Image 1 (cartoon, one colour):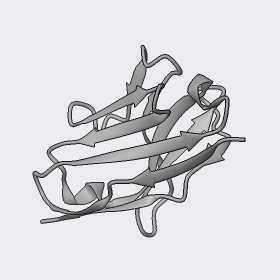
Image 2 (cartoon, rainbow, N blue to C red; image 1 turned 120 degrees about the horizontal axis):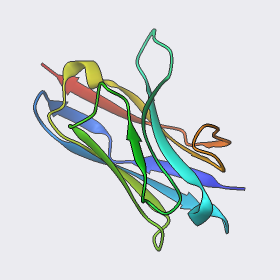
Image 3 (cartoon, helix red, strand yellow; image 1 turned 90 degrees about the horizontal axis):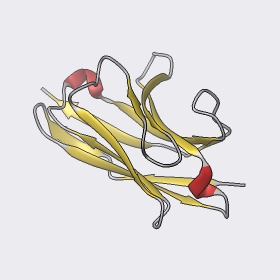
Image 4 (cartoon, rainbow, N blue to C red; image 1 turned 180 degrees about the vertical axis):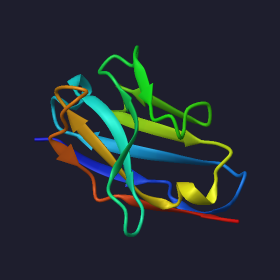
Length: 118
């Protein structure tokens, strides 16, 4: 079992930055692929970014490419999402996810709210 707890959300003006963190617990947490998803009110959940277990490969949605950076610290069992040049359309609840495969996620966090004001 892997438990995920997100933090770092908040209210920021357009153009600002935030860094989200996702702390994982569980013996196998270091071996999982990790990802961030987001869900805005009235919209479906969408993929934001993913990173493989070693951190050597990262993937991004086109909408955040060049602005967001995903990274991980396997010693701390924590995944980060650095978000720069934030836009009002980035407003959503951001969820952390973990899975054995980059294409399939078995564990989800409760989410952290990010609100970007114009």
